[in-house]
Each structure stands twice: as C-alpha cells, then as structure tokens.
Length: 276
Ligand SMILES: Nc1ncnc2c1ncn2[C@@H]1O[C@H](COP(=O)(O)OP(=O)(O)O)[C@@H](O)[C@H]1O
Ligand SMILES: [Mg+2]
Image (spheres, helix red, strand yellow):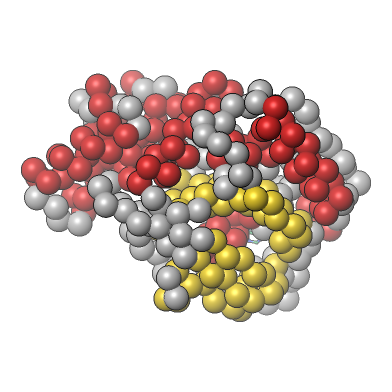
C-alpha cells in the first residue's frame, strides 16, 4: 500500500447545532503535520466528536475552513476514514468480504481486491481469519476488521472517536499500540479523540486539550516518547502527570454544557472527577 499523510490546517472554525442555541465552538484553530498522530483530549460534551465529524467532512462548519494540503475539505472522501466505538461490520459476511467492501463498491477487479485485502489483514494480524464469519470474532478482533477495512482504502488520515473504550484493558492496549505502529509504518495521519489521557500518551505525537463551552483548544503538548510505549515506563508516567496537571489548570472545573457529563477525563490508575 502506498500511503502518504496530509498537512491539516483549520482556521476560524465554528459550529452551532441550532441557529438560536450557543455555539459548540467558535474560532477554533488547529494544525497537524504530515504523518502526525494528534490526540484531542477533553471532557465529555466539550465538542470533540463534533469537531471530528467536521474534519471528516460529515458535517459542514458554520464558519471557518479546513484544508488538507491546502485544499478545502467540503465533504466525505475515502481519503479520510473514520473509526467509531462500534465496528459496524456486516454480520452475514466473512472477514475478507467486510474488509473488501469499499473496494467492491469502487469496482475493483477481484484479483487486485483480494491482494489488497490480504495485505490489510496481515497488517492487523488477522491473516488467519479471512474466511471466518465476523460473528465468531471477539470485540477486539472485530475492531481489527474495521481497521483493515479502513486501511484498504489507503487513507491519508484516520479519524478515531474513542474507538477502543468498549474493549477490555488488554485488548485496548494492543490496539492502541498496533494502530500507532501501522500509521507510522504506512505514513498516514491519525486524529484520536479521547477522554483517556493514557490513550493520548500511548498513541500520539502531540496532544491538544479542548475545554469550555463554547469549546476551545486551551493548550497543547508534544509527546516525544520512543516506540513502543508502555504504560508503566517512567517517561510515560512523567508525561501523564504533566498532562494531568495541564488538564486541571487549563480545563478547570466543568462548566455549562459539560457540567453534567457522565464521564470524565480518566487514566487507568486514577479517575479524575471534578463535578461542579
Ligand atoms: N446532534 C446534536 N444536536 C444538538 N446538540 C448536539 C448534537 N450532538 C452533540 N450536541 C451537543 O454539542 C456539544 C458537544 O457534543 P460532542 O461533540 O458530542 O462532545 P464530546 O464528543 O466532546 O463529548 C454537547 O453539548 C452536545 O450536547
Ligand atoms: Mg464524543
């Protein structure tokens, strides 16, 4: 697969769900380098998913622009692919059919399609499951199928909206590690929305913290740690406390729209609750 990343420039972005209500965010600026893994961290309700949907071209911004390599994003494309918490597979299809579904719709010849699917299955380490029904797979394996289905499209950018939060801790950490290593190997960008600081540190080159109502990007951090990253590494733990401190001082106590969020920023070792 030949994939290159994309340079992302977001200027003056604003969004409101209704003309009369408060904006979800206004005048948001965000840049991402080619091939970068960027995490967006914030409490529930601060607008992370809304921002991700707009970046993916699924929602139109109320104001501002998003540019990929200097070109305005004005709709969905197979060059940027979104992964959700639920893998949304076709339950009656085998693994290989699920992975190849995008190529089938794009009219790829059978042989090229089969080669590309096999390559994607090797990347996610499901090469031995090609002929298995997806219903016989675990939740983590199903997410790997969803990942392979995204990879066959050779995306420049993979957008992840808390995609592993429904998985057990062991499965989650292997997917966090593998998604990062596949992105680095192939060169595409990642944007990971999460309320889990550990996930940001394990997966990202840079993390931005989003907070407030309307939401803002309040601070950002480079995460210059070597790979593979392990939760218990002292450097990872030091980064976690820096980010936690920054999160608390920058994000402050929940206000307005995010004051009644049922979840909060957390880590595996520590759950931070600051309900107003
Ligand atoms: N479809 C929608 N219609 C109206 N308001 C919405 C809709 N989706 C989200 N919101 C509101 O927009 C704000 C941001 O939501 P969201 O982007 O889902 O936040 P996050 O992903 O950070 O939890 C919240 O106050 C939420 O209630
Ligand atoms: Mg969300």
